[in-house]
Length: 493
Image (cartoon, rainbow, N blue to C red):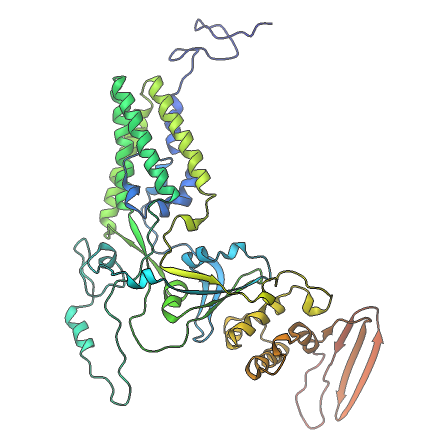
């Protein structure tokens, strides 16, 4: 049976035939394609507006994602505990850029890594421009006027008076750091998003040329309006990520930090205080070219009005131009979705830092079981935490960050671990940390299960032993002392 088709005279059929008639193909809904793809564009909104290439006139999917009344003041962060080994500074979140250098999402539970991070030679030799808009519009700027005319609250003469202050004669003078702008991490010039912006710009103006050739004025106006929206929004949202830096040249301890994830993985980062301040303990500031919020909202309002006008114009283009613009939006949506699969390291120029993996070989497989079934051969939180204590040589950060429970038994275990790392007796690195912990809290593994209960009444000690079947448990309830000593009833040790 032949397949019936629409012939344009009202006959019913399976498929539309032709275009621009009652029973043919119609693309009036193509204007909706301009606002589809919000999820993928929202993920790329910050990285896409961190470069001047984001101001190119072009069509972009879902431009309403960038039409926000407010702008973020800092970069997104990850949930992980960060604590300084020497200084004890604790931060409940991990900043954006260190999570790009060593992603915590890629770590398996109970895994362990050790990294060294330092400034690259290229970064140390670079000369920062103190008159750039990044330096002027930084919130840490206290000397230079804002790029758009706004001044800081700190007066220059107050700062000069501070610099001329008389140091305490009993203390050594603290050298001041040179007045340089805070370091910033620029977007890569040829990042995937910038390449997509260039490709979108080329496609837009190719379609514009075809519209001129076909004498479609409505399509030309629609493309100009959409391109104008991308330029206005890109300029209003242009920003640069800036990091916090130290203002004092005083000698301070090393800035080593320990990162602990919710899954029990540990990362030890060995670095100086400058790197630690920039990446871990400081804040990542978003410095915008358009510093004034009022000016930003004015530009966003203009772009919103132009976008609504562009959507109306798109619905009135001829069939061929609607098909071309609709195809461009479909292709761009697919490309921006594919860009979300690219590692974030490809979007940012992180040549400011040099990263090296120096994890000891015996600790590299902390998330895997070793030969044998002793407590220290099985992956566990305690074993990985002991690896971190062994590498840092300190125990104070465990107490500060709350990595270990604040019970009496765990405090005794931390004291034993501190004795190992401070004493450094022969074979201290092979200390059975998990087995020692199990003995202290009252649970040890063996060939048979043995329950020991120790009751101390006065000066007598009663021991009871029971065999239950494959695992050894110990309970030491201290009932009391006749001399009025400490009484802890039914405490599992």
